[in-house]
Length: 460
Image (tube, rainbow, N blue to C red):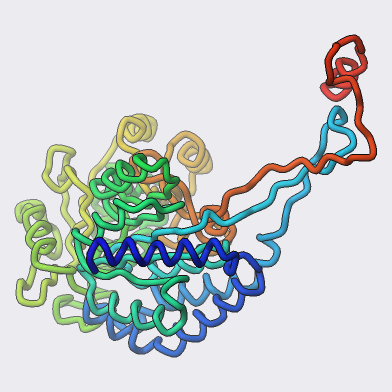
């Protein structure tokens, strides 16, 4: 799509939003129901597309993408009426007689830019929130996942008129053309580097934005952890989608006294979950393309591999890999891995490990395996990170009851459920002042002391 076509599309959406058609709550709920039905209708095609782009099995495709999308849409169908209501708040005595409330209103015309690693989930989940909040939307899926982009376009074109919700496919040229437009709100999921570019463009128009980025998410394993269960859950979360998950454990930071036992359990779990030859496992995914495959292969130091390390350039697959004796100076620690490589680092002092983490960039996720209540309390209260789990990994994002998002270098803003509705809404603070009484104290000339007395009464 050319820049002119994109501009014309946005002009049509602005006109549609200006008509007020998206504001009534029954309209929003009807659109969500329509979207739910069409996603269900094309569930097999969605999973086929995910298999083509990322090698995901149908089970994983449903568990991690289409199933979660259906859950989010159904949640918004049930709760949008309540979310859209105005919220009465306390009115100070000095404002007598009036009614104070907060009214959620849609931002208006929104842009949703999604990545390739969970291309369906991260396109349709925020779209459901945008629709629930009463916006129009242009969805821009990644060019790296063309099969999924095609089914997204098919679903959206079947559900909605383009002046309401539309899809723009393509690559960098289309991304640049979209960001040159003045939207009312931009929702972006992707890398830090691209996130900075998005923020630069939105700053030009003073457009609010939510950025869901990434980072090196640590997985701390202390001496009190249940190592067998920790290894089982870490292997699941790390190698899901072939490691291409923004909240996957990027590396393990474990107590040096349990490292050898933990690595032995990781090896055992990799064999149990993926078999003796993971590259022949039909349910194990693949790296998205040659560029990322080659980048990941360059991060593997064969001298430090304790299991895995094998790769197949024809299928873009890398076996689940664990590296030992890793330090911060290794190449694998210099960037977000975003692949099936798991470095293991150690610490001797838990307090020092936490101090070191405080000096690093704030990650999107952090995980702690521990039964030590003091350690759990310190990690949850002292460290800054987007979200995480105690004694598990990645599952914190699979609920509509909690917001999901980053902080600092890992992003800004959150979504899912009520947080998603809020992300795509502006809350207007309104005072409805009654006309049957007009207290004179606020008007000049200032002679009465009653207003000051009322304020003191309120402040007690």
